[in-house]
Image 1 (cartoon, rainbow, N blue to C red):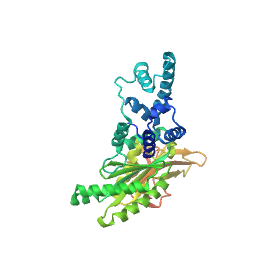
Image 2 (spheres, rainbow, N blue to C red):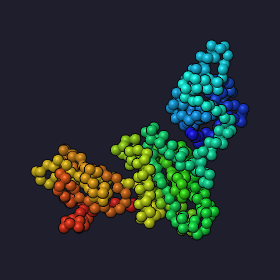
Image 3 (cartoon, helix red, strand yellow):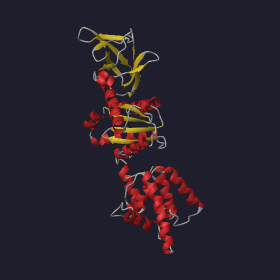
Length: 375
């Protein structure tokens, strides 16, 4: 089911308290005063799923926002044509049911629900009952929508350090109190839904989506939040681990190419934070590997392979810059220490002489070492 934010819901309630139904106003079935008209216009600007919510209230069917908007104006045209033929206004409800059931044949068992029931169901369907944050399904739908809209954003996975131990010792009721307090801190820090969206992923894991925020800025904001959590729960030893990924519509600037990879990468970073002892914020860092040609031999292929790509040549194939006569590749790395080599034409292994560190490779030679710092 599509959702509305709290600001939009308040406007819905205000209009309803004046004795109006949204669908009657936007369909032209009634002509409200200027104040109500202004509120409706405000509502349309606030609710990113206005038309999909409109159709859901009328027929209890889900449509994505673009489809719903197109259908709505088709329904209005259908309504005006039928009303003109009959010499009377047939109303938006009859027009909607007739158009979607008989003309478009989209629905077969339509059901009209009261707006108060719609809003109640909406709250239950989108919010986590313990914390009051959005639930995982709503979060996923929101993130998918932003990707489809080619919007840039950062996503953070948060996991409480020490929570399981505390929960096992003090009991689930005490654990629920901690989760509730932690969620309250998230709401306080990331309260503006025009900029952020926060929710509970499950258990003691949470997600914060930061709209139009690059991962470096997101890291700063989340590190401030991490320190606040550390101070708030210092008496019981609970902290928070955070992994942050960035999605960019220009995939060359993005940490992931799609929704699944984005979640996988954020979770990967979160796990690395745990490996480093927790209570940190990690992001992927773009590392540029360069292989400089040393003689007249011109290889057909150069690959950089190591711990970061499981020594897979295909994953490390580099690009050739003819202007500067070098091979290069950008790889996103999480904090850690990595061994690597260059593989020339699939059979010649060469160390990166530009590296600062080297170790034995176990075969009588050496590996270059790349250290990606935590900060």
